[in-house]
Amino acid sequence: MDDTLSPLILRALQKNPRPLEFFLREQSHLPGLRANVKLVDDVSNLLAEVVITREDDVRRVIEHLMRDEKTLEVNTPGEFVVLCGVVACGMCAAVHPVWRPRMIERLSEFACNASWRVREGTAIAFQRLLEAVPDETSVCLRTWANEGNCWQQRASIAAIAEPAFMNDVAMRETAFDIQHVILRRFQAIPLSERKREDVRVLRQAMGYTLSVITAALPEQGFALMRECASWDDADINWILRENLKKKRLAKFSDQVEQLAKNL
Image 1 (cartoon, helix red, strand yellow):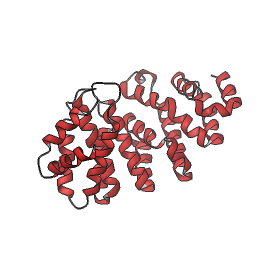
Image 2 (cartoon, rainbow, N blue to C red):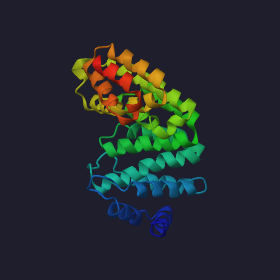
Image 3 (tube, rainbow, N blue to C red):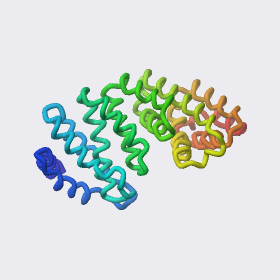
Image 4 (cartoon, rainbow, N blue to C red):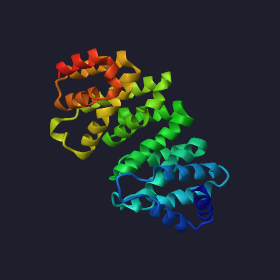
């Protein structure tokens, strides 16, 4: 793949991005159930390798890839092209500090995109940033959790509630704090607004993120679950039940069974 992709990236950097775009469309695996995730990573890595020395050229390529962000159709090759640009935003910002403020601003917009793949791309972009600069990125994710809309809250918890990050003490504590804040904010959403798409998507994300964090911090996680169960909120109870089903909590069977009885 690199033998084909690298020359196309070079041509794109030389102000001829169309061949790259056509290649991404052809290799997207869309329409379909699963996009070509490896190709997304390859594109972002190759652009990140040259972003410091060819900053303007890389910016131009990324903006070309993302130019249809507001008009794209779901499950199409065009959606895949935008996805590549979004993940490249995070990867390039991870290695080029000067880019971070502007790219984080752009990612805050992509977190609210109508395409679920683009929203997922935002979470992946932030995972690249978490790997490179965890402290700085965690501050941003905390801000989204405390002040962002439902889409941005979803991006913040989806980005950090990743099993690979739970091996780091600071990361898992940050994830717990973010999860707690978002659950509290979710509880405060009026019942009349719970059917909104952004609220539904946030609820769906929390249907698995809480179990990831609880598996890493069982004492705090189950205490949070018990607190949530006491709220007697139907949507929160759905979130709890979904997490209690996850295999990662199977080794805590006694606590799982006790919580399940209370729901």
